[in-house]
Length: 110
Image 1 (cartoon, helix red, strand yellow):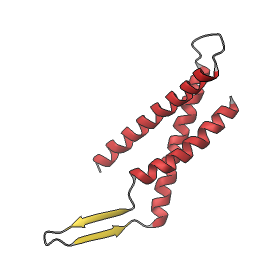
Image 2 (tube, rainbow, N blue to C red):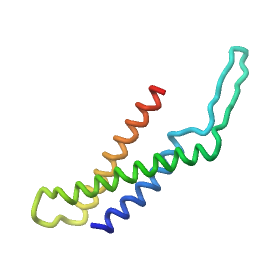
Image 3 (cartoon, rainbow, N blue to C red):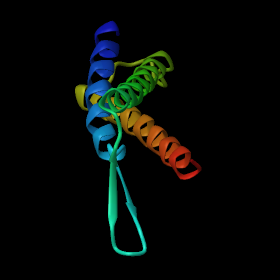
Image 4 (tube, rainbow, N blue to C red):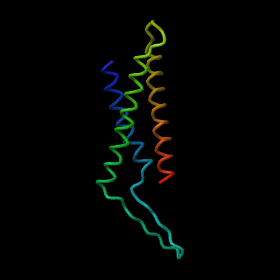
């Protein structure tokens, strides 16, 4: 079980970094009435901290999902490899959707 948790945490962190790069822009564009655009860049240190914070949260939720899946087994018999992969992917996707929904809601109200 420890191996599954570590793999889920590492993969969740890496996928969180990739998703964070897409979700969180590092620039902010302001358009004025005269047609002029002003582009401001977020400092690199703040942007990297934001990405690492998002990735670590995604990693923690992925590991929690894997732990819950392994702790609360519905049947007493062992499941096959395909069932295991389906369960891990399902728990990862549920965690990803919850975190993405929460981040979109938070960014909408900022």
